[in-house]
Image 1 (cartoon, rainbow, N blue to C red):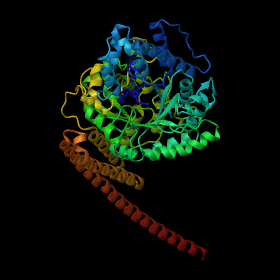
Image 2 (cartoon, one colour):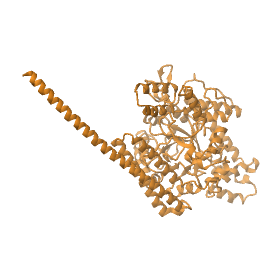
Image 3 (cartoon, rainbow, N blue to C red):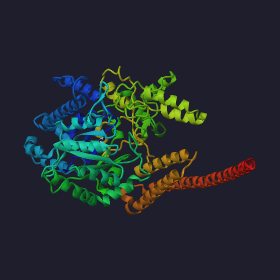
Image 4 (cartoon, helix red, strand yellow):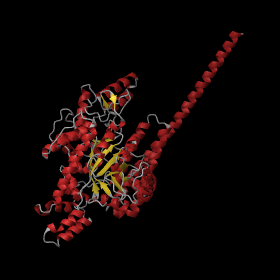
Length: 635
């Protein structure tokens, strides 16, 4: 199905896009709601019920299957009122079709819908004459949802563990599956076999004879291999993946799932060259699985390929669409500065406006243990640091969505919690580590922040709701691209920027998205080399070498791309080449450091071998002396 727009708004944090569909779906724009925090969804459902003057019945903590029910109820409310806005937009008797004209105005100039409308409107005396055309051609944006598959906390009633279908991700999936939405669920953070198997229980995830699917699957992936493995796994269960959403490993917001040095450009090239192969391989697995289940076998199914991570202007947007044949491009971070689209409290939004490269960093604050893009000075980190100064590191863990660590018992706890950090610090103290090593490990422990609360609190503050339970601290997770945007933006201007009608970036020094990602990976590799240099192992050595070689191959790919597609990539392709050459020089110096680690390893191995040989000789000599003494005593 052709979408009205060539961009989508990905999920951001827990609260930043929690009600975005209510603001943009009627305009034909796809966006994504996070399903992490059902408590937050319930509070917003109450708020919107009061705002829209509809009955509200609370789903309390005592309710059975409360998480799934809360999610279903919230999604149904958003769906109902987004549809009402959309129907109002199509009613051209209101304000002479003012809202419909706004819908058309936002579309790209290449849109056939826009071209047809402008042609038809010039031929009629009254816009109401276009009503049949409007009903057939004007489409609403998709209200999609996101689940981080491995954030699948076990749940208990009193002390009794509930069956796996009541785990957090399972319940969220069920909540979406039972909702009225006809949209897509984005599965991110890798494969969860139990969750994937659970999807088989819901008819809406299966295609009908025509290939229509009420609830489509979108997999967020970082490379082709991951897409193939996960796509086949689901196909064996009769479930088709309708979209593979490729995300940059580091040039993105939120959690950064770095690849082993595989850059976005080469990854997209592989998808481009193997797109048909991917479809055929997965469909060949799907067909017998559906036959076995005695379900309809559609002859043709939709398979979209999209990408996101660091795109910042129309040239990059259009090149990704044209060269790689992508179906849509994700624009996330810049929309954090669009108050009419995302939900961000004023204090945090003001900080984002002022943030520069040095303020945006890859942190270790996530309780999941995955690098996390963050902004220095955010109010949640300040709250964490105050607790640390008081000698009380860690969070009280009021929501517990990331209680996944079983290091200290059978019942999982969160690594950002006060309980875990106290136990972990005690265990470190018992090890009697050297001071530097202890401080390093201690800082890693207390750096963890309560993101499952911090990433949602912004919605409470922005809507004027009480934060006594959660606290007022807000975590924020922009991508590195935020550094190049320095003002609040209207939705019209933001979309105009995406489509090349307007430029909202005042800085002239923003690097091309491919170069930016490359340099982020080089910095990431530098950190890995620095960590390994203390006591490198052979395994680390091989990993670092492989990582550097993958980056080098990526740079060579970009040089070739510029030679062949330079004019289509950017008007300043010579500048990009110059930046690539600088990056290549940095990488070569880094490779020398990695080679030196190998030399260090060889020398250390020789020293260890010599030490062992000396110890062996001394041991043998001692043994011989003892033997002589013993023999003398025996005589």
